[in-house]
Image (cartoon, rainbow, N blue to C red):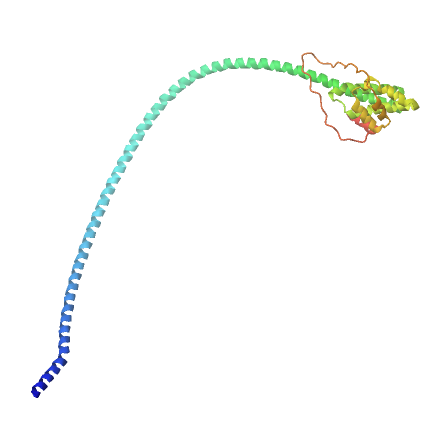
Length: 314
C-alpha cells in the first residue's frame, strides 16, 4: 500500500510538473492558428481594397473623359448660339437703324414744315406786339422824360436859389466885417441885419448852419456895442425887440455863450409879433425838392476870426 501510494504521489507530481508545459504548447498552437487566419483575412481585405481602388480609378477616368466630352459639346453649342445671336442682333440693328432713319427723316420734314408756318405766324404776332410795346414804351418814356425835365428844372431852380442865398449871406457877412473893421458901425449894422435876414429865410431849408447865424448875431451886437458905447445895453434891448429875432432863440443862445452881457437881455426879451413868412418860389403842380440836410459839426472855439473863415468856406 505504501508503495502504491508513493507511486501515485510521484505520478501526481510528474503530472503537476508537465501540465503547464502541455498547456503552453496548446496555447501557442492556437495562437499560431489565429495569426494565420488574421493574415489571410488581411490579405483578402488588401486584395478587395486594390480591386476597389482600381475600379474607382477606372470610374474616375471614365467620368473625366465623359465630362470633357460634354464640356466640348456644350462649348460648341454655346459658340454656335453666340454667333447666331450676334448675327441676329446685327440684322435687327440694321433694320432698326433703317426704320429709325426713315422715321426721323419724315419727322424732320414735318417739323420743318410746321416750324416754318409757326415761325411766320409768330413773327407777324411778335411784330404787332413789339410795335404796341414800343409805342407804349415811347409814350411812357416821353411822359417820364417830361416829368424828369420838370423835376430837374425845379431842383435846378431851387439849387440856384440856395446858391444865391448862400452867396448873398456870405457876401453880406464879409461886407459887414469889412465895414466893421473900417469902423463904419452904422453901415456894418445894416449889413449884419441883411445877412441875418438872409440866414433866417434859409433856416427852414437847413441851408446854413446855426453857428453861422449865431456868429452873425454876435457880430451885430458887438458892432452895436462899439457904436453906442455906454448906451449899448438899451440899444441892444431895442434891437432884440425887433421881429427879425423871432424864431432865432437857438442862435441867440449860442451868441450869448461868447458874449455873456447878452444873456440877461435875451432872458428878458419879449418876442414881438411874428413877421409874415416870405413866399417861396415854387411852380404850381410840381413836386418840391427835398431840402439838403447837413451833419452836425463838432463844437469849435467860437471866436470871430474862425467863424468868419468858416462862413467863407461854407
